[in-house]
Amino acid sequence: MVRLLHTQEDKGKLDEEEYFLARPKKLLSQRLKAYARRRNFKATPVWPHVFIDETRIFCLAESRYPPSKEFNSNVVGFGEDLRLFDGQKYLLVKSFNKKWSFDKKYIKEIVEAFRNLGSDFVGYSMLPEKPTLIIWGVGVWAALAPRINEEDFENERTAFIRRMKEECGFFDLKEEGGLVVVGEGKNMNFNWSQLDENRFVELCYDIMSSHPRVKNVKITEGSSDLGQDIRAVETVETLLGQEKKTWTIQCKHLTSRKVSTSDIRNILNAYSQLKFDVFCLMASNFVSPGCQRLLKSWEILPNVNIKTDFWDRKRIEDYLLKKTEIYIRYFTKTHSH
Image 1: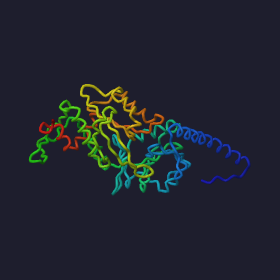
Image 2 (image 1 turned 60 degrees about the vertical axis):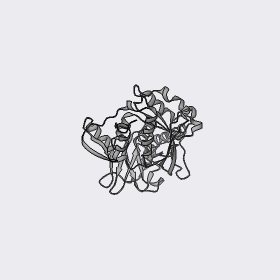
Image 3 (image 1 turned 180 degrees about the vertical axis):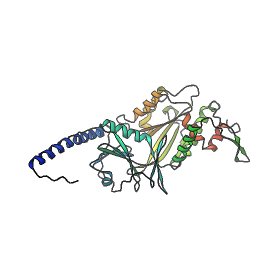
Image 4 (image 1 turned 30 degrees about the horizontal axis):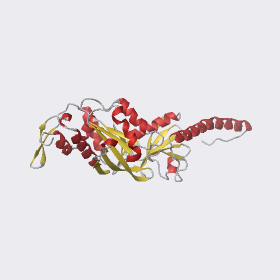
């Protein structure tokens, strides 16, 4: 609706309304700039009105600079042609002939940023031509790059089935003449005590090597004093295109207790020598809440630009449910050492 100004009184009322609307916008703009400075987010010549995080995987901007204009792309909502699924670890988006996944840990970080800015989460839309997920808040939005992993849909399906039927029987897997054959239903048995430390590192190596976007996976013998057991290179999709990320992986085979903060604290001492972008903890047991908080705190340390990840026992077991060739190699009697 177009409002017509007939009198000076009307003009004064409209000026007053615009003043009260402009003030919250100005405060939001100030908060966003301050938040960007604290988190070392940067604007770029390509997108001067948006602030990109150090990994370049997501950005934040005010609603007065719409994503359709900043990215020069149409914003599309979800419906029959474009469907969205909220999984355990990934937000899944599927069209007729394409599918993308988005890491929920970044979505959680974005929603937390909205709260810090005094904004509320509203919902999602998509730039399918890029492709980029748009996350909307009140007066602010974020853009998130997709993951490069065509197995995310299967991972979520496996996790869903396991949640729905934790005690269901699984395939009895055997090997005959070099071929894996399926017998009658039988529970998969993860006997972690049958693995020693070296064997567990080999298991972690095989898990990392099985990811299509991870290359150059190497067991780094002789560098155990630095806390690095495996090194790998991952190709990730960012808002600026594909980039290579170096992973340092520390393997903790602790069958009798959870991984604690003291088990991983020294890895940061080797940061300047190892020069990694991502630190990943892989454990044969669970990771204590304090240890998880410590990992997260490393991501906001000054002069340390890293992301962190961890694979605990449950995540490894969930993954091996659909990687039977790895399961057989380490958890059947004929293959365990």
